[in-house]
Length: 463
Ligand code: HEC
Image (tube, rainbow, N blue to C red; front, side, top):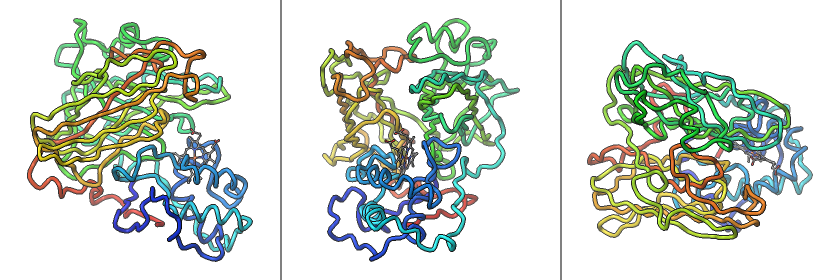
C-alpha cells in the first residue's frame, strides 16, 4: 500500500479503547462518512475478483452487509491486521480508529442512510501493482496449479525457475497472483545457482501440495538442489505477497539483489483460500533489473525454526498442550532494521519480539495477541530502527494444541513437532522470526521508509 499513515495526523491511536472523546456527526450517511472509509480500508480486498468474499463498494453492497460490517469492525476482525498497534507502529497499517468504528455503528443504528450518493465521486483505483512500469523479466510458475473445490485452505510449495544470458542485479521483485480471488498469501525465497552447479533448472515438478508431501520427499520432487545434491544459496523472504498490500518500496540505494544466470524462486508457502468450485491458478513474478549492485543490500536474520538460533525448548507439543517457546540472539554487529516478519503455522496463538540494547533500552518489534495464520504480514517500520552491537533480540511464541483451538487441523489433536527441513508440511509447526536489515550507518535513525520514489503518485488518505 502506498497510503502513508502519519502517526502525527491521527489523534486517537487505533488501539485506544476509550471512545469518550470521539466526536460523531448528528447524522451519519453513506455518501458523506461511510463510502470514503470502506473505499480506503475494505475495498482493496472487497471488490470484484479480489480475495474478499463479497464487494464492499456501492451503497447497495455495504447496506446489505451492514450488520456484519458493524460486527467485524467492532470486533477488529476486519480489516485484518494482527499486529498490536499499541506496541509498535508500521507503514500501511490496516486498522480503523475508534471514531471510524463508531461511525459505522452509528450509521447502522440510524437506519443505514444513503445520503447524497448521486454526488459521490467514482470509487478510487486500487492498483494491483506498484507503478514500476513494465518488468524486465516475467517468471511464471512453470505449471498451472489445480485447486479442487473442496472448500478447504490449500498450501503449495512451488518453484519458478529462470535462465538468463548472464548474471544481473534486480531492484524490485513483485509477485503477481494469477487467481486474485484465491491467492491468500505467498512467501518466496530467491535461489541463485553458483556457476556450473545446475544444468536444467526447469526439471522436476513445478509445485506440490504441502499437506501431502514434506521433508526430503518434497525437496526431491521439486529438484531444487544443485546437481551434486548440495543446497544452493537461498535468500529466504525475498518476495512476499498478501492481498491488498503493495510490497515496501525502500529509499533509493536500499535493497535489491544479485540475480544469477540460473536460478529459481522458491515459493515456501503459496496459500489459497477455500473455494467451492474447481479452479486453477498460474501466478508469476515480475522482475525489475538494476544497473549496478545494490549500494546497501537487504540482509535477513532468521531466528527460531531453521534459523541461526534454536527454539527453546525444542518445538514439540503433546496433544492438549499449550506452551510458550522462545529464541534469543545477540547481535555481533550493529544493524538497521527495516521490517520484521513473525511466522507460525496453524497452532500459534501469540507472538512477541523485542530487543534490549546494551544501554538497557527496550525496542518493541512486534506483538500479536491473537495470531491468525491467514494474515502473515511483513511489518515495515516508518523509519529504520538501528540496533547497536551487543543488542539481544528476544522472541516468544505461544502455541495451543488443544481441541478448543479453532485452527486445530486434527481431531483429536496429535503430537506435533517443529519443521526440521526447508520443506515442511503446514501441519508441522514453525516458530520463526525474520528481520530485514542493512548494515548500520550513522544517521540511520532518521531514514524514513515511507518515502516512495519520486515517480509514485501522491498518497491519498481519508483520515
Ligand atoms: C486484506 C484484505 C481485506 C481487507 C482490507 C478487508 N477484508 Fe474483509 N475479508 C477478507 C477475507 C479474505 C475474508 C474472508 C474470511 C477470512 O479470510 O477471514 C473477509 C471477510 C469479511 C467479512 C465476512 C466475515 C465472516 O465471518 O464471514 C466481512 C463482513 C468483512 N470481511 C468486512 C470487511 C470490512 C468492513 C472491511 C473494512 C473495514 C474489510 N472487510 C477489509 C479480506 C479483507
